[in-house]
Image (cartoon, rainbow, N blue to C red; front, side, top):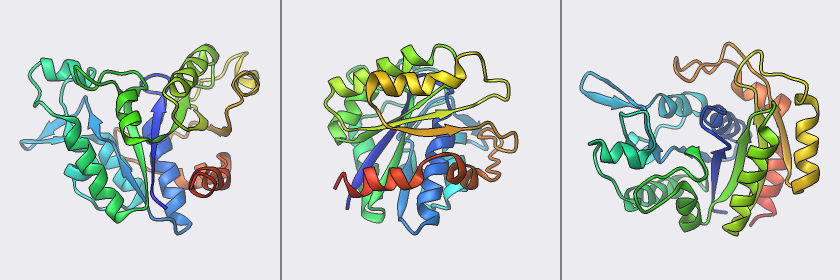
Length: 244
């Protein structure tokens, strides 16, 4: 079994890091040797002369993986903009080869790697490549993370359509509540409506938990939350068994 699954989003800030970390942690808790990767991280911080990705630190903390930055996040960029723009602003240039090499190294250690994308599925990573191009080159399955509230039907269906146009395997959709007050009149019906229109598999909705913070690297009971609210068994069956 060897599998790469891209965790993409309908937008930035929809909970990709939390879902990637929590799902990978749940797999590892079940004895599945899952690795994690965020190939490109923008909006990184600099401390002590070193560039740091809070997302990468959170992925490690939630899963217990120990691989170094050059494997987990081979490209770190300080400007909080799309990677292609960051490169034009003077960030260190990078190539797809760096990302591929990091993934190859990880797959030698882990039969399955959950790869958190940057921004959404069509975010430009370089002047020549979108995030979708990277997924296509890696032949990755795609799991979409979406907001639960108003507007998510359009955003999620557009992302599903973009994945399908690339003829990539669509793993399904996870909804993630990133704010305590992220509920409105549409929240109770959005998931069923998206499932009805798209036929995509819905893995559940991860509720907001104030004890979890990517920025402060607080994991809280993330794995337990994933186990309770997401269909982890369905994910394993569909992506790690039937997809073989």
